[in-house]
Amino acid sequence: MAINYTWTIKSLSKTTSNNLEDVIVGTRWECTGTDDSDNVSGTFVGATPFSLNSVDPDNFVEYSSLTEEQVLGWIKNHVSGSTPTNYWPHISERIQKAINDKREVVRNVDTIDLPWAPTSGSNSGSLPI
Image (cartoon, rainbow, N blue to C red; front, side, top):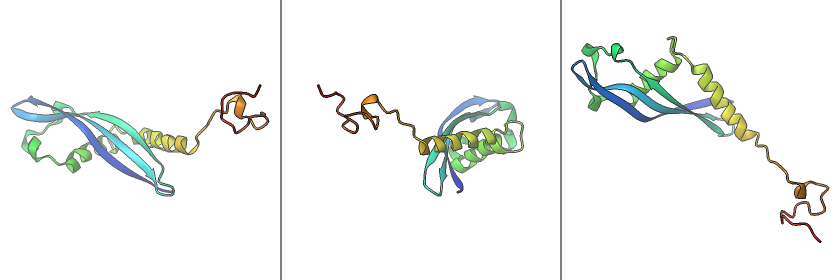
């Protein structure tokens, strides 16, 4: 029972600053975990900001040259790296809860469908007169 994770970038926020154009300052993303034992999945929706102060002009990658893999690397490092911003345990717990919630569906049973009701199983919504 292993969870496989898939990350997807939904949007980017960019700005121009310090003689650099189209600097990424924010991301919106989803991480979906799928249990390989039964293919039940859960998704966590997140947003990750990036500080303009962290941009190294000498290693700046032009917006048009960015790859999804690069930006996902920034996000993953931010949320699950060794930095103080690490909140991977929270993300994985929320995904696991979403998976468990799908497995443990609770349905309310109306009076008409209680096992001892005279019309049990009819789902007609009306009682005989």
